[in-house]
Length: 328
View 1 (cartoon, rainbow, N blue to C red):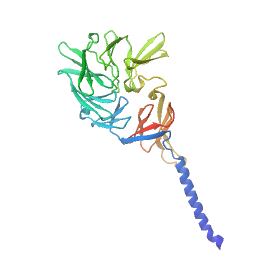
View 2: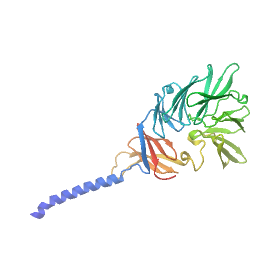
View 3: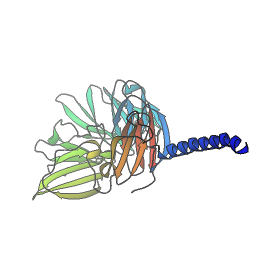
View 4: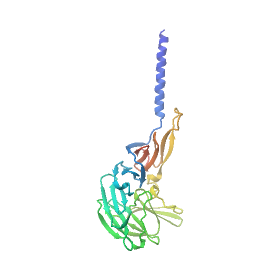
């Protein structure tokens, strides 16, 4: 009788053990984020990434810094043309230029010359360069505006360039060194800090991550790229064959082996587990290259920024920033 009475208890213990084991195995085999550590998260806005640095709302006044997570507001974002340069959101609206630091600590407005058309040229840590064209006959001048919205310097645009527009990134990234093209293809580089202008031979100009300006020329069967962090701080790299078409955004200005946006990639997949045969798994971003890791979520995932300090993703309706635990 005792043996018979113990059997239900033994069966119950065995059933509980099986349930616990199943839960443990399920937990251990469930896909999850690896190789990354969360830094911050914030509610997303619907818009586009500018300069690889900020998510700017298309129908609101909000911008999110993809590095720090700081949210800033700027009333003219809705109607003006936004750009990113030197850690600032810059919005051009008619003859007015609005600026706001992506750290949320500064905001200013500068009014350009009356009856002039403005265009953004370059951005350095302490100055933004604008091109103002107008008058009869039409002529252009370059104006340096400081971080208080005050004019720092002004100089006529060299006549060799006529009224040519400056080269800026297609993704709204402003170069740290301004570039204007003369009628014969010669380039005029502008130093925002000093208004100094330097002549360079004809080349293909492109603007990359964080405003790096790259000049590409093909000669002797090689493509030579000169990348400008500032007018006096450059690096040169050569590769066999002709230069490809001008790159924009994160592709431009990349130096092999040093830029995570060029040497680290994310691949969108879906992760499933053996014990749950239903559905098609969870959205997953697999990181490979200079840095490695994996982001797993229940919501759709999209890469917003990759750099040597971390990865920023759009996770459903949330922007999340992760730091690397490996690689680099």
